[in-house]
Amino acid sequence: MKHTISVVVEDKPGVLARVSAMFSNRGFNIHSLAVGPTHIEGRSRITLVCDAPELEQLQKQLHKLVNVIKVHEFDSSTAVVSEVMLARVACDPGSRGAANDTGALFGARVVDLSEDSITFEVAGDPDLLQAFIDHMTPFGIVDLVKSGRIAMKKQSNMRPAAVSGMSR
Image (cartoon, rainbow, N blue to C red):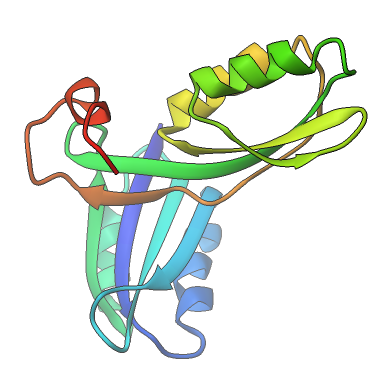
């Protein structure tokens, strides 16, 4: 089972290594890892996605690490989750319009254009990114890279469909 874990830490050298070592020492594979500063000076948030049967004991051990401030596990009903992806899609001039129209359906932005490919940037829920990949596969995906998953606790009960109509 995949788990999304948020670990707020002091922004100090070696903290990421100690946190990630906790997972690898227990044989848990980290599928996604993103680290960045928080709104509080001197603190960072590590967001990990890992495959593990149960994380309760691991969470307790993470709390014991020096420089760890807070540990929280998210589930899809209580969190806003997002990733960013760059995907280079093969297309000749005859299929460029269809590929561009398909990308637009997913809110993809064209970030590079060549004679034989289009590179799209897509941001959103991991399911949206997978749907984009599924729809672009017939064109031919030449290259693909994703950022680590980030997550934040929801503060409202708004459904994603209700939110999508809001301006950015």
